[in-house]
Structures are given as structure tokens and as C-alpha cells.
Image (cartoon, rainbow, N blue to C red; front, side):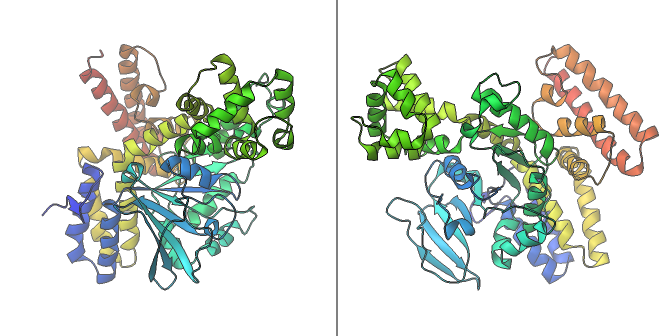
Length: 502
């Protein structure tokens, strides 16, 4: 009987259903140990897409997690919880389950502020499972990971030591990665992603399943960034583009963001009382405001009618950049409501672009990402015994031969190219990554905004080129990728023609 649901949960789409049915069909044909592994693959196929948020210590990782969830629940100060893996997932009752290294679980309540307690009071913790009645978590399980330290030649080994076997298993199922970096564009961030990958069952991060956020861009000094012309967000975009070049092809994109503003705007931390305090500050003369915004100390210690404690809270929630943006908005429109100010802060955070990219790279491709990750796990589980390995390999090839499974072939090709397993000329590598890294046809063709007829002609031209390359100019490994890219272009050509473009 085809598998369509497990424990009341729905599969992400037809590709996950096909892989789930494959697992069910293969279980009687493999060893008990492999069959048990297949059962775990089935469980993951029926779960929401698992997105791990990774980054260095003090990169603002947990603050971004709170913005993603839309609730201030993840601790952001360095402490016990920030050294543990925490999995945020959907549940019908809000609760915390502390998972111990021996597998036992202990249920705890959230603290009075609705957050995970700063001190858990339990010994021998492996990781934390947090269940929230939160609509976002119906689509994503968000995994907050311990911050990585500075990296050297032993970084991979040290990162693996960071997690005990049980907590390592808590992140091993991560199917996508949001990597958080800060403005210091560092050459070893590429190694940091590799180190994180090693700690998470060595599942490769790539342009299909990984994006990065350049966080805390309000700390950028725009005058130090060539080409920014003194504009903060222009400087942030230039730095993000540089980081994207550095991290390519391990991430699809690097997007600038201010997670503190995103958290305050998205989680309800910005209140009507905060808006009223900003309104009082906006009434101060321009010279006084300029002096107060020069530093955090001046902002909280200056003598004015707004209480120092209230100003300290504003600084904690918005920092000087957010306060300045809010005051500028009030100068332009004094009657702005608290809700309108919240939208100003949200727009100033850059978070809308991050969330949009998450939707485009992760949510829209969840079926393919999860199915591809499941096939990788199935292959790995069956690799111990030659006979079993061949049986599973043959079954996977039959599945991949179906026309509807082409997306899995394309994801496989992307992984081969982005990981360096198949080497192509730089321009061809860039083309493969582009073809597979966005659902938008014009962007996949590298011709955004161009007329439909031009897209049709180009798709057919590139389909022919890749078919010729596969037949006459490629190594066997390159030909495998080229055949997939040829078919991708051909399918785009068919899609465009079906849409009325000639």
C-alpha cells in the first residue's frame, strides 16, 4: 500500500511519497539494521523540513531564530542553553523536553517570559526539544546549534567533539542550513560550514539547501566600504556580495540583515510604550538627539524627560541604528502608530529578503530537498553489504528514471558540482548552479526580464549545447551532469512554450 502519511503527518509532495514507497518496498529485502534505518528515513520524510541555523559565537544566531519563529523563545545571552542543540518544532501544547544523554526525557515549562529557562537544573543534557503552537513550525523545524568558535586545521575534529553522539543525532537530520556570519568577511567561513557539515552526518551544504545571512550590518562603517557612498545598506550589500563570492558554491546567496530589529518587530517585543518613548525623543531638538545617538552611553545617560531605564530598554531592543530610523520616520510623519513604527523597523531590518529567500530556496523546494536527503541516507545505510548495496542502487535508479523524478537528478548534479566531485570549467559550473538554484525560469536561464520568445530560443539553444557536450566533449562523470542539465533546459523550453511563449 502506498505511503501517504505517518502518525498524522503529511509528506511534502510526490517526490517524498515516491521515496517513502521505495523505503517500504525495500525493507523486507535488507538486513534488520538497515530496515531500522529506513524506518528513521520514513519518519524524517513525514516531518517538516529541518533547517539548521549555524554560525559563530555571538553572530546573532539565536536572535535570528527568534525572528524566524516569530516569538522570543531562544536565549540570546551566552549561557547553558546556547551551548546545546535546541530543536524548535510544532506541537499542540507548548512545552520543553530536555533529552538526556542516556535517552531519557524530562519535561519542563517555559519561564515566565515564555523563553527557555536560562538554567535548566538538569545534569547530563544531550539537547532540547521545544514544542510550540506556532504556524511557522508546521513547515520548518528550526534547529538552533551551538556557536562555532574560531577555526584552525583541527576545526572539523573540534566541531565534532562539540556534540555528543545523541545531540549530534539531533542535528544529523538537518536537510537545509541557514549560516549566520558577521561583517568581518573571513576566509575560513568556508571551513566553518564544512566543519558544521562534519558535525551533522556529513550532509553537504550547497546552493540547493543553504543560504547565509550577513548579520549585524548596522555595525558597518559605510565610509570604509568602497562604492557605498556613505550609505549603510549599500555598504551591507557590497559586503554580502563579497561574502557570497567567498562562500560560493556552498550557499545559494548571502543576504544582509539586522536580526535584533527583526526579532523586536516580529516577536511583539516592540510595544506601544516603546513607540510613545520614541515619540518623546523625537520632540527633542536636533542637536540634542544627534549627541545622544553618538554612543550607547550618551543615549542612556543624557539628561532628558525620558527615563534612563526606558532608554536602556530601547537600546537593548533596537540599538542606536533602529532608534535613529524610528526617529527619522517620526520626523517625516509624527502621527505614526506603534504598528506603523513596527513596520518601519521590520523594513529596516532586511529580514523580509531573508524570509523571501528561505521561501524560494527551502519552502518551495522542500519536496525535492527532503527526497534527495532521504535518498542519500538510504544509499549510506545500505553501503555495508555489497549485495544489499546493489539491490538498493538498482531500485533508486528505477525511481530516478521516471520523468517526474528529474528534480532529484538535478539536485544530485548540483551536489556533485558544488562539492567538487565533478569538475567543470568555471563558466559551466556557474551555469549548472544557476539552472538548479531558483524556481524562476528566467532567472535559471540568466535572462531576467527578457521577452518570452528570447527565453524560448535560449533554452533550446542551451539544451542542444549540453547534449553535444555530453556526447563529444565530456568525461563520463561530466557527461552524467551534462545529460541532466540538457534535460533541465529541455523541460524549461517545454514549459515556456506551454505558457504561450514562441
